[in-house]
Length: 342
Image 1: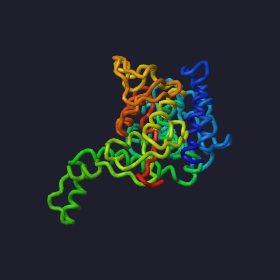
Image 2: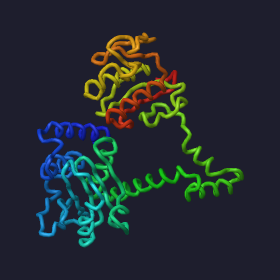
Image 3: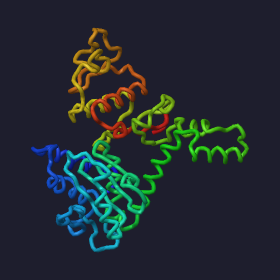
Image 4: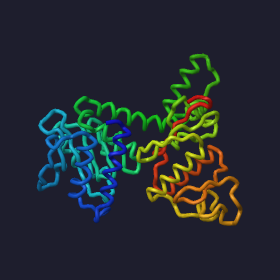
């Protein structure tokens, strides 16, 4: 199953969960049965015989699930109800149990949020935490479930996944500080290569500067932070949060398709938007203040949309809409190609 297929399947499952009459007040038992075990079977590839739900002991020390029981790769999952806010302390007893049984991996989940702990790391549960994901970012959740999948655990891939997550978190922090240890090591090496005047600020500027998009490159809204990134390019496809691929040829089409998708999925605020001006879309081709649009186009279910916008302006509007409506800005992607090339 590809990442795109996993992402789409996760969304289908979660949409079914949201239709339950008791949602989001799911009991722990319902969360285990309808969310956690289902995702582990349908996304992570575990069969019914690959896990057991452990009996409740008097001290409550046993984790709720053991995966790959009676094997050297067995690991534990501690479950909570959907609306229970997870804390690292919730994983404490499961980590102690794993330690007593010589096991390395523990997962804590309420179905909505997922946390992976590495018991080989010395320290507190917070220090053992190597990766997190939640249903607000389906792409990240798909990667998480792939990282703890049956194939990944049996092949040792879970260790690589954990190392990559820890490395990413460390680099994200280090590469924001010109005086960090890693940046200063790079400065020293660059100076040894003859760049006597190089500083930590130069290194940070290199990693933070926008890179020109390659041909046929997919970029999330998060990736497109600077107008220079879309200069001399045009969109070819856009990918919605449910993994739907839509062919496009212009930036206006990107805007129209995104607004249409938001409307169809109940994520679009009512016209006029923004409420104070209606400068993006309205039920009439005018803003709230009566100023006519310069280049409007009707979009079914949305209204009249102002299309006299730059590519970067369109990206900015879409980011704003996503953030205001609980949609991760990295869940919408655009495939860019160089002008003049297919």
